Amino acid sequence: MVIISENKASRYSGYSKTQFRYGMTYVVITFVVLLILNIYCSQTCQELFYESKKTSMVEKCLLASDEIGKLEVLNPTTVAQAVSQMESLKVTRLIVTDTSGSALFDSAGEAAGTYVLFPEILTAMEGNDVCSWKYHDGTVDTRAAAPIDYSGTMVGCVYITEYDTVQGGLIQSMQRTVLRISLLLEAVVILFTILFSFTFSRRLNRIMTSMRIIQEGDYTHKVNMGGNDELTILGNEFNDLTERLKNSEEKRSRFVSDASHELKTPLASIKLLADSILQYDMDLETVREFVGDIGDEAERLNRMTAKLLSLTRAEDAASQESEIIYMAPTVRRVARMLKQNALQSKVSFQLDLDSDTPILILEDDLYQIVFNLMENGIKYNQPGGILSVRLYREEDNAVLQVSDTGAGIPEDALSHIFERFYRVDKARSRATGGSGLGLSIVRTIVQRNRGEIQVYSVLGQGSTFTVTFPAFDAEVDKT
Image (tube, rainbow, N blue to C red; front, side):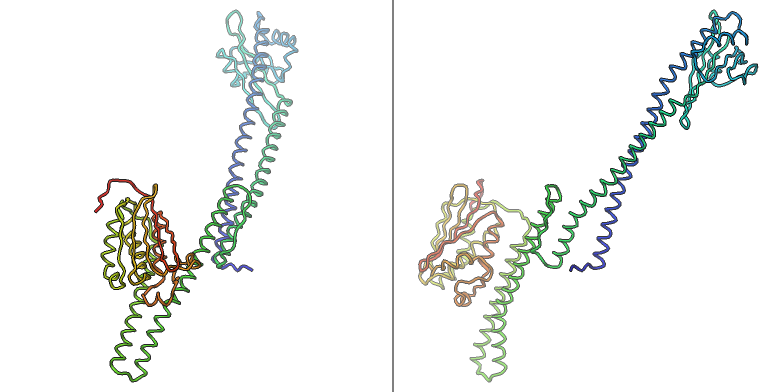
């Protein structure tokens, strides 16, 4: 059972609100687009009908105007007779006026003998053919007017109206059809949005659930997204991150455990020696001996903490500006630094540095690598032994090789010597002040500088450490 805190619950509730908001935004956008398309289709349909109707109405006006324009006398009687012969017009209302706007004939019988000043008639009086229309509730109300010419002189105008319920019903039917299609499409969009949101949320929730599990400390958990899209890539990246967190946590736990164990021994020795001085009546010489041992253990602690700090810095170091350098000057400097240690251990140096090759590395990093390898070669060598350092080039690589004539390393220990706090001979390591961190530091620095380190050892004959770096050919000062 997974327990979610109030803060987490509110966070995931916010996610649900965001999901709803994005979904509604998508629905609203599609609704507006469909609405615009619906209005555009409706208006386009009406305009097409209007153009067709306008042509028909103007033709009817011109036909009536031509027939009436043949009359020599324009009065209600002659106009009525002329109109009666135009049965093919089939209009709702026909009005004929003189030049003053007085109705000479009205098929509806409402305006005869009165002035009819409709906008279309006024426009026709100016010598223009005109047509207008209105659509309302399934009915198309079309009005047209045209001037009447007699021998090149305008003597009146013809005005006709037509209420077309057939075309009006067709327009209404098309509008309703487009509206239904739009509503259906919007319903499909809403359904698709809900399904997509549910599917997307379900897959995304797998990652969020996995995050909660990881927060509880279960780094073995993996998320299976399925599919082959961006969420799948996100899931794979999440699994890779989890694996790195798992490895990092294992290293941290092992480091804390090993460090606690290693630090406990010198601390226990210091406590035992201090308690002995306090509890027992000792002569001055014995007290001095115990105090000296306490100092040795304290120095051992100091060296160990310094190594731990070096290892931490080596692992956590950010990208840094490297430099192109030769390795020989650094090897010679380290040899001078360790010369006194070698004399005390009766170990002689054998340096072969003529085949040096420049590499890209920070000089402090190279110094630490060479110092640790040569210091180990002195510590674990035999009295009268030889420590050899050789530099050479192998194809596109620069090679640093450090060999000793010590007791060698057992085969089963070769795979562990680069681990933290690992010692081949623990008794001898403590006697020589070894912390088991030097080789771990060396490997970390070598890998950080794009290099590799290998070891070859034979029991009773000694060990050889080979460090390989990419060669960087350039003109560099060898000093």
